[in-house]
Length: 142
Image 1 (tube, rainbow, N blue to C red):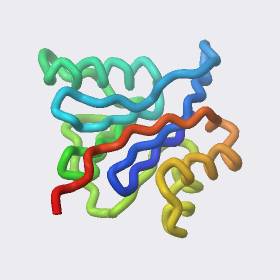
Image 2 (spheres, rainbow, N blue to C red):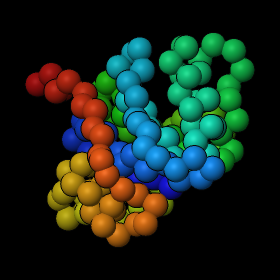
Image 3 (spheres, rainbow, N blue to C red):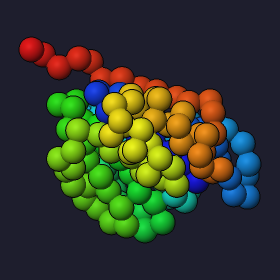
């Protein structure tokens, strides 16, 4: 399926796409307001959500019943959406979604970065594989 991890202003994701199409895709995107978003689950539902978000949420919200999305906002807060809108805040300092989420969260619990956590998931989850993509937010003002 997917592994997407967020920690320290960085979002990382594997690139494996498995289903009727098997290949590599980019699973993380930067929205016009600077928010980073990544999606797991049904690829068509995730992509429809990304297009809707990139449009500024114009029109009817897409169905995400078979998907979940992880957001890293410009203020470095982490948000989550699954099954329906709107997204809601997560108070943890890191988060992961997808089939490799448990492995990634364990790696981050042990101090690993988001990218390193996805790498761990690549080793342990058959539905997660390299290459790993990353996007970063600007550093927070002191």
